[in-house]
Image (cartoon, rainbow, N blue to C red):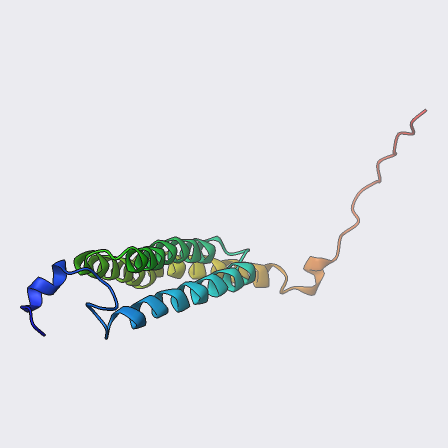
Length: 146
């Protein structure tokens, strides 16, 4: 360490200047991007009937795609370390905000709505006679086409 800690922020992010950080950050960005792609595909297919869960995964997908792609671009084109650090902090902070602050109230209300629907459905079909069509009154005559 030849510079003051704050001076490293304005040094280019390369394997020569940051030998202990460069490859772990670049490789983890690639791995996390691949994991995010797989999770997005699997979860949106599994939850395609539940719009709030699909919205959650859409938000996570776009935020992760932007964050991890920017990290890769900044590593390849040797940006200053302050830009890489800012991208990591803002991107990971946004991912945490989406997952733990923005969507839990939405998902909670959706789960309550589903529970209410299940309750009403159970009440409606609790009586065995509720599922049987009743024949009532005289039948209407059908018109024949000529």
